[in-house]
Image (cartoon, rainbow, N blue to C red):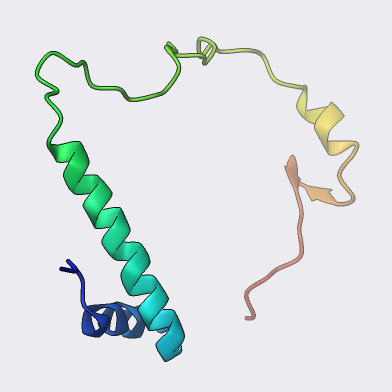
Length: 97
């Protein structure tokens, strides 16, 4: 007994705007049925004392502390800009007037 029908596969393909052949419908139906069967097997496991796993490795926050640092002086930044005006980098307009 399959848990998913050819019509359901066709419906999902239509929702995803995918054009699939009849051979692909048959193949995907079998593949999706195998995936659902495996997921049902996982539901049979007793996970009462199993901690939730968010990552396969035991990792803590690997980000550095966010700290305030002094930036470059404005004059040094502007000397590399091709064009600047009033202490700001001037760029070409991208919205028509």
